[in-house]
Length: 257
Length: 297
Image (cartoon, each protein chain N blue to C red):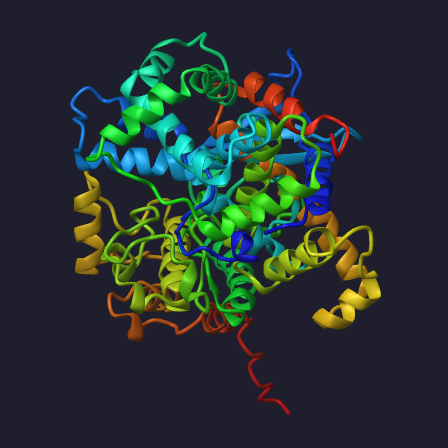
C-alpha cells in the first residue's frame, strides 16, 4: 500500500501528525470542551488518528495484548488522557519534557490500570470511538512479526514521522523536476525490497532522464527528505534544542536499532 | 505500507543528511553561511550579505516560517530560471533554525531603489536602457509562462558592471500551474504603486505578461522622473489613483511619455502584450535616428 506517500490532497486519514501538535492539544484541553461536544470529539479523533500507531504497537509487542484488546485499549488510553486532564497539565508545564516521552510514560501507567480504564470505556457508550484503519493495522502487524521487539513505541513513532515526511515530499512537488525527484527517491530508497536497488541507468531509462540527472535528483531529494523529517520534529517539540535532541534520539542510533 | 528495510534505510538517511545544527555562538550563521550584514527586510523575510565557508560573498534571504509554501515556489521557479541571464542565480537553499532560506548571487550594485535614493533621477535614456534590459530578461520568463507579479525598484538588482538582475520570485506565478495558486481569488498580493489594476482587484484570470508590463512602466516612470506614477497618502488612495489611470507627463520626451502611458493603461488589452514587445519598443526609441541623406550626392 503506497498511499502514505502519494499526494494526499489535504487528507491525513489514518496517518500522520497534525500540522501543529499544540493547536490540537489546546483544543483537547480547552476548558469549555464538554463531553460529547463536537470540538472536543473532533480533537480526540485527531489525537487518536495521529498517534495510535505507537500505542497499539507497544500494547501488542511489549504488553502482549491480543489484537482486539489492543485496539480497545488504544482507544481507552487516549480517552484517559482527556478524562484525567493529563494533557492539560502538560500544556501548562514548560518543563514537562517531550511529548513523545510523555505519551510513552503515560502508557506504562495506563497499562497498570488498564482493566479499570477498559471498564470505564465500556460504560462510556456516548464516547466517540475512532476507527483504526484496518489496512494500516494489517501492515503494522506484518512489521511486528518481522522486526525486533525492542522499543516498539519509539520504533513506530519513527515510522510515523518517516511516513509523514514522505507524504510532505510528494505533496510539495509541483514542477515536473520536483516530481521526477520524488519518483527517483521512491524508486531508489523506498520501494526496493532488501538491498537490491535499481541502477542509475535503469532509473534514467524508466524516467526518460540521464543517469547524471538521477544522481543529482537523489542528492537533492535525500537532503530535502532529511529537512522534512526535521521540520516534522520541530512541530512536535518546544524549541530547536529539543528538536535536535529528538532527532538524535529517534534517528541517531545505528540503523536497524 | 513500507517494508521494514526501507524504514531503516530512510531513518539512516534522515540522520546522515540532516541539516547541520547551529552551535551556540552561531547566531551570525545560517546553515554553513556566515552573516556579514543585514541588507533589508520585507513582509516575506530578511536579506543578508553573507559569506560561504570558502569566503565567497552571497546574499541570503531568510523567509518567515509561515512563508514555507512561497519558499518552495520560489526555489522551484529559480531552479527553472537558473541558467537565464538577467535573473538572479540560486546557489543553494535549505532550512535553518531561523527559517527556510535561499542563497542567491550577491548583486554588487545594490537595487534600483538604492540607485534612486543615491541619484534621485536618471537621464531618460539611461533609464530606458536599463528597463529595456530588464524587459528582455522578463520576456524570456514570459515565454516560459512565468509572470513575476512583484516588480519594483527593490526587486531589480544591479551587477557590478551595471547590468540588471531580476530577483524576488516569492510572488511569481506559473501560468501553467493551475494547482499552484497560493493567493485566493479576489485577494491581492504585491506592492501597491506598481500593481496593475487586475492585480489590485485580485482578478486572477486576467493576469498575464501585461501585468508585469504595467509594473515595468511604473518603474521606468520613477527612474526617469524621480517619483512614482501613482501616489496617495494611503494605500487605498494609491490604489484609486492606479484604477483612475491618470498619469502626469514625464516632461522629458514625448515618445517616452507615450510608451509609458501604453504600459500604464488601465485596460490590460491596451498595454504591450508582453515584456518582449515592450523591449522592442524601447530599443526602437533608443536607436539613433537615421543619418540624414547627403544631398550633395
